[in-house]
Amino acid sequence: MRAHLGDRLVVGGPADGADRRDGEIVGLHHVDGTPPYDVRWSDTGRVTLVFPGPDALLRHPEESPSPVSPAPSGPGTAEGAGIRPDGTPGAGDIGRRVAMERERQGLTRAETARRARMAPDYLAYIEQRPADPSPATLVSLADVLGTTVSALRGSDTGLPPGRGQALTNPRLEDLTPDECRARLSTHGVGRIALSTADGPGVFPVNYEVVDDTIAFRTAPGSGPATATDKDVAFEVDHVDETVGQGWSVLAVGPARTVTEPEEVRRLTAHAHSTPWAGGGRDTWVSIRPTRLTGRRISPGDSGSGPDS
Image 1: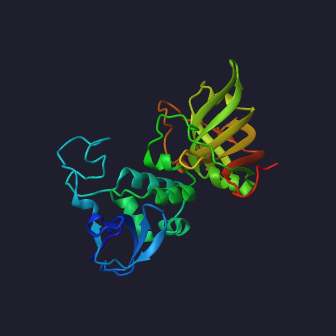
Image 2: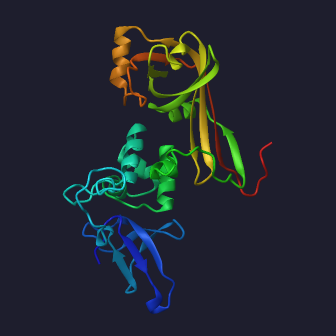
Image 3: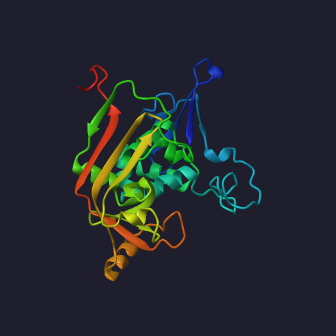
């Protein structure tokens, strides 16, 4: 028996009268793929060391590939499903999202794997191949990356957050300033709230964090551009529908239009992407927070009552 990371180990079944059990191989102990294996079981999500017996068999992801026919790339096509035009497997959608979020957080693959308690080779497999990680694996990765399982799966696109069930015994906790800065990270999408001529307004913007300053690009005369010379609020959050957890960070401070050529060049050089809204959005606005607060919802102790 020779396995690869991401293979499924199936144990038992109707033939021998035992309950069938399967799991994902997340760790190898020999370079030639021979037993034993670290297996994350699909029924419990736990990882155990397994020496397969005679009732065990391996299933490789490539054993039952979908037919590949020439077609443009995109959702639902071969390339969109992780198959390159030459028919060889490439990175899947989940792997691309994991890699993108890991790089956004500035984490190495080894550090991410350590925090998620998985083998670095297995994380590499997820990022580089059309893998189908178990729910427990996705929960671990989402927790480490400060995102959600739904976001990693891409299943929450276009849906408003907050439709999942609340935790049985949730705990609402304040975040420390360092925890707030870590969740702001270096860039992403946030919301700026300010007063406009038409009343209060909230605008989503692509932002960067450079030297503790929040900065975003917008178009002259747009709603976000009116933040200049005002005290504004800037908010980012993450909601995990799967486990009913989430966090939010609020930064409050004065905003100004960046006009110095050298600072504009520096912000542009640090930018990770162009504004999603497109168009001529070349005006940089910066916010230097004077107040930074945040909260998170996490599971409380099962035996304790609600916080007072």
